Image (cartoon, rainbow, N blue to C red; front, side, top):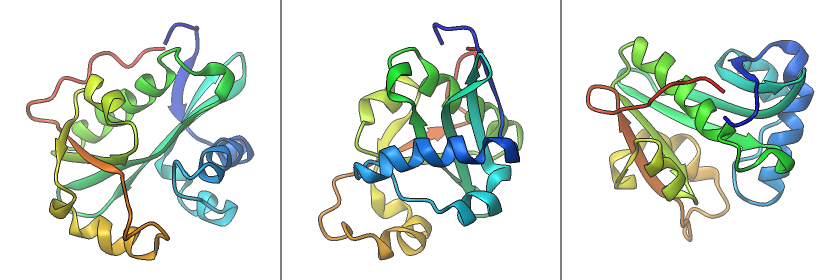
Length: 164
């Protein structure tokens, strides 16, 4: 990240900021909507980017059990875009998940080039039945989905440093 800051696990004090960031992107149809109740119950899985005591970005993961993990709910405040905050967030999540011996990390996105720059490779959505049955089956765009599936392999990938 080009601006001094920190990537850390989210706390209850961060929920409103996380909700605001996610709502901005979900209102635009870019990421799935998350309720405050959902955020509170899944806070353990969230990370935040903080600059000058302000939350400027967020990212979480979902554990499908076994070998499959998803990076999700990635968002950065509009006025902090293009400062490597999103990359720093996903690199931190990747670092933590790889340390837990989770070999397969995937993402569904409309911006595959961003994730390719961060060590991900395109895969078929058909390799992700757990995701399809958990989230996609209830999505209004299931029949017209344009999201691209990408995967990061902890055993061969290079996630780089995680500092801001």
